[in-house]
Length: 420
Ligand SMILES: Cc1cc2nc3c(=O)[nH]c(=O)nc-3n(C[C@H](O)[C@H](O)[C@H](O)COP(=O)(O)O)c2cc1C
Image (cartoon, rainbow, N blue to C red; front, top):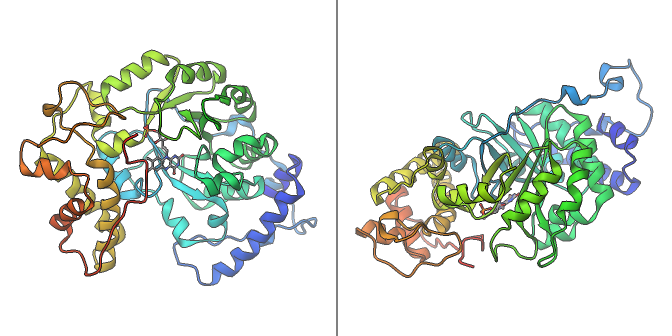
């Protein structure tokens, strides 16, 4: 089915070769695969005319009206967050009021190879009632087959295309923000994914690639024509990474250009105040996505919904950590391996969480890129939780998960937790 759709959409021969290679690997990988990894029977699809009866799926194409409809309006969307946006963390954010959740970025070729690690990234918790899987790839066939597979094998509400990842090797492969420079391939990706399934296809992107040059407004009419169901725009270019402030005026311009396709704005929201300011600058967006703000204070969703600022005590924050650890042990297991996996991911999260400054200590509300002076908390625990020292994060992990094993060391994976 996906090959047929891609052929009709004239995806290039090179794209197809890549897919064939990937499918061969997949068959090898299947033998040693884990039981909860779906079998990927892609090898049955070939270039030859198929034999056997003609099925409905051979002749019936998905029409627009059959696409599943989602009402995105006014919803709070937790960003896809590689490493830290794991299932236990998303479960926590659901508890605090996130409406939409999305898996960490999964590499489409790895999913087709039936890689257990990659499939683990896209598991959904039952509390995630509006959940999407984010795919990263550079090839229409691979992305389309993956979408078909997700619809067949999983219960997922939408599929998101990563069109913003700035990481060098992803960019150089022409995936993530690299796909922004390959308009024809991108067109095939979006249109073929759209045709192969009834799942809404969404796009998450940045304002452009180079320095301060915003280009994505040129793409908005195209995204609309190609059938995107939602566009989320992080208001920075690839080269800006996290420097400068997200450009919410530009988000507004783009939102108007993609209308009536809904757009979500994304960048730097850390409080209810930031949320209202963003909406003031971008009144035509349908909703917002929150990333680091939710890592620093997962209760941000409830704050926004209740239009309040919460002054959370250190013991209440410790309870939030306890919840996370319990969810982690439930998800990764409570044996030694599960405990250590939970610890690693807890530490990754603490590398963001320590940036929270309790409201009672601040004169004005905390802003994303403003580094606070070193401060003493209102109690020892609050001071410990504010520490940017890895060894203090390890101490906190020991209060929750017991002593670290001998030879244990930890360095956070993400640079995005640092002050800009
Ligand atoms: C640790 C981390 C991991 C991220 N992983 C992803 C990802 O897998 N996919 C994606 O589209 N964006 C990813 N992002 C970008 C965020 O989704 C978001 O666009 C960005 O952080 C800006 O929003 P914020 O200012 O609310 O954090 C990641 C960001 C961070 C900080």
